[in-house]
Image (cartoon, rainbow, N blue to C red; front, side):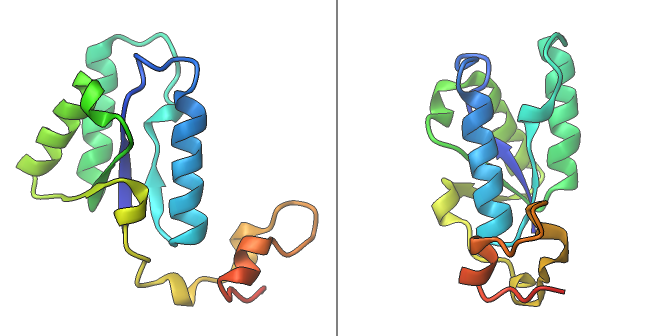
Length: 130
């Protein structure tokens, strides 16, 4: 599944990137999904520009994952409403996201850690090296 991450950003400027990146890694490595992460946007755009970009990402996604404390974010609430209007799947928390149907077919070739080693995450999930 292609999943969009939604949660507080502008009211958590010191910690949002780390939280969003951790969620992306969990959903990609452990659960086998493709993740659209708004934390990669450049800083300095207008709020309306961020929302237009985020809506385009939601349009490309199969579902939206509401991260912890999403209720504290006006942007996340708007993203949820936008996703619901488009009949996207909604997950509250990364733990509620099921494993990807394609996960068992995943090969490790794209997940090498750069050291030439076999990442522990892959080994623990039975992903075979290519």
